[in-house]
Amino acid sequence: DINLDVEKENITSGALIDYNVDLSSFKKAIVSIGENCKEDALILVETTVPPGSCMKVVKPIIHDCLRKRNLPLDEIKIGHSYERVMPGPSYIDSIQNFYRVYSGIDQKSADAVESFLHTIIRTDEYPLTRLGNTNATEMAKVLENSYRAMNIAFMVEWSRFAEEADVDLYEVVNAIRLRPTHANLMYPGIGVGGYCLTKDALLASWARQNLIGQNEPLSQSEKAIGINDQMPRYAFEFLQKQYLKLSSTSVLLLGVSYRGDIGDTRFSPVKKLYDYLSETKAIISCHD
Image 1 (cartoon, rainbow, N blue to C red):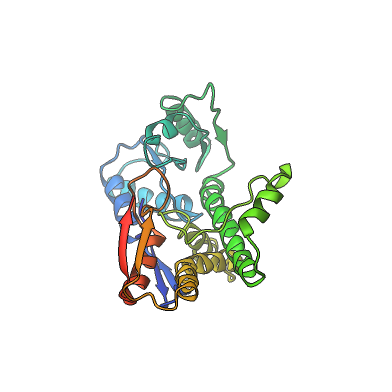
Image 2 (tube, one colour; image 1 turned 90 degrees about the vertical axis):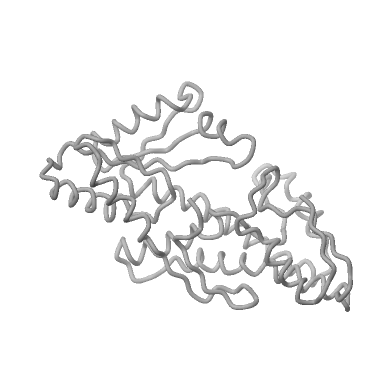
């Protein structure tokens, strides 16, 4: 589950120009399963996929493989239940002790997924939620992450406005958070990293056009990704305004991973900020 299924084209500032979704590796994996699985196996997709994948990609491939093996098509079970894992020391705990959403391509598939999940998740405290079809659970995963990416992009825009108006946005956010309905308002930052928020909205937009068959993309969601990709550039330009000369200036970057308490640097925005600073010949130190 890494960010290799979405290939982005960005300009120097980080602005998103174009992107492409490549499912070739995913399809090869499904073919391998179809060529070797038992005729009554449960195939449970837990990774993040474009909405429509189980019905439009997985099911046709598995059925084609079963036909070639002269096996029946009515016993195989295909389902989807996305992970909500938290990388770091709580990884295993976040698998066993958290709510799961699941579905199947038909009734028997959904029932089989439910039975399996009961064996690994503490459903007495974290009940399962069944959705109507696999399109729904696939959409739920990318919508969760697209929602967060959109909120982050929203705060990026307001952080620029606050700087222009000589306002401390952190104190503004703290004041607004006193209102219970706005307690989850985010702080601005220097970027978005990891393998979910940086691309899941693009998976959804691509799916709408290529699997669901619509002409329009999810334009707001795509724009949010583009805004977030430019956040390290904004941070760099802010530093340039504060220090007219960054050459030979000592810069300490506290925090390198894409979130706290993990050792994962995949697509960390700090990498982009580091590259921008390196071009100025600044003296950079990193600590995490």
